[in-house]
Image 1 (cartoon, rainbow, N blue to C red):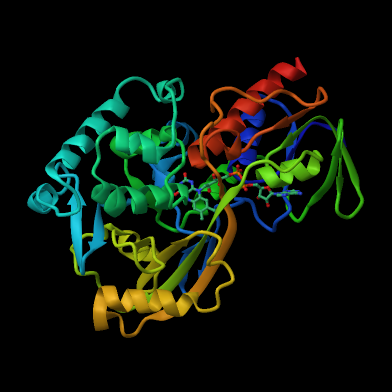
Image 2 (cartoon, helix red, strand yellow):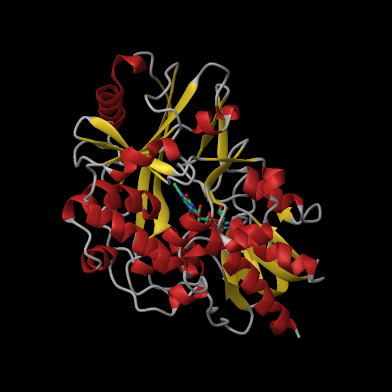
Amino acid sequence: MECDVIIIGGGLSGLSCARELHKNGVSCFILEAGDRPGGRVKTDKVDGFLLDRGFQVLQTGYPEAQAALDYNGLDLRRFPAGVAVRWNGRFHIIADPRHHPAHFFSTAFSPIGSFKDRLGMLRLGRSVTRGSFEDIFSQPEERTIDFLHEWGFSEQFIQRFFVPFFAGACLDQSIKASSRVLKYIFRVFSSGDAALPAFGMEEIPKQLASSLPKDTIRLNSKVESVSSGSVTLADGSRLEAKMIVLATSRPVVEKLLKLPHSGSSRGESCLYYSCNWKPPFNNPFLVLNGDTTGPINNLALPSLVSPHYAPEGKTLVTAVVLGEDHIGDSDLESKVRTQLLQWFGEGMHDLRHLHTYQIEYALPNQNPPTADPYTLPDIINGCIRVCGEYQSLPGTQWALLSGRKCAEAIREDLK
Ligand SMILES: Cc1cc2nc3c(=O)[nH]c(=O)nc-3n(C[C@H](O)[C@H](O)[C@H](O)COP(=O)(O)OP(=O)(O)OC[C@H]3O[C@@H](n4cnc5c(N)ncnc54)[C@H](O)[C@@H]3O)c2cc1C
């Protein structure tokens, strides 16, 4: 059967592309190598716990997510607006006083930064919320670390707050990622919340997939090669279409199109634990490691945000360790356990390791220069288009946007 478009990859970008095509009467189907759609956004059920494959959140302020997703249907549960920074043997709460007036004094007098740093944060927040989202990408970019120095932030505030915060978002501890990424993250934080669907992050691709006609997604269908107008699957079968969309990660696109390997990526290890403990602060703030010691960069307690993440009476702890160096380290679990016990004491004595995800390709490198997410790459051989977050800035917003824009371009191509 020939259809208009074959989409390779059923992650967020492929699903978004398929949705837009179907909405406009263009026939298409998705070939997905895995046994379910979602790509990097998956949730596993382990002993009654919901484990997202790598700690991820949905920023409710993403404009494309607001347009593409039904937030009520996802039953979003929001993290409190603030962080707990572990520094010098204590947790220091830095919270948005509009939402957490009780933390006004701890925020205003926090030793994590100086008064000048706090003013800098207010200035930065005001500056990134001016103008449109698109404006961020017309401004010059530089490495975030240089940008923060130019803005006058102190070295201690950069190390204690920006490094763990920004590294947690772009998985880059050297914070050399583009200043556009920082501005965009600040912008979405100031226009919404970090949230989890009540039943795990995979509810996001599930919701997108449920809006597609039955049989649009063919699972366990790994594409081995692509040529103009056709694709060949791992089982040797060949399928034809007027247009082919590659909606996979960059390394797979490069392999399928026989392009040279370009650009590096960022990896992480994500360790899940169960315990009976409750945190020493009232709200389940994201925890950042403001000390430069220990493997953990950031930590979250998803079951205190959505109780469905753990069986009744249990707390789910997620610890994130950045970098590829730790991948394959057989001692990592005991190092993380030691740090958790140092931080939280004997309250965590019943800590049980549930699972470790080691993700080599979590996000592409985002060092400058970054591509403008609002322009679409050229068509290849007159019938192949590509979409995916690596086309712009990594993340849900850009995966969804690139899929939709690719579908719009294909509608023009087919005319
Ligand atoms: C650990 C981690 C944390 C993250 N945290 C956040 C966060 O907090 N906020 C945020 O916005 N974003 C976050 N992201 C990024 C976000 O998940 C990705 O940007 C987004 O899911 C990418 O979607 P995609 O469709 O472009 O690619 P993918 O999700 O990689 O989808 C590609 C699909 O193609 C399929 N495929 C590959 N090869 C073939 C083949 N040969 N044939 C057929 N199918 C194939 C794959 O199986 C996959 O389903 C995180 C990602 C990770 C891994």
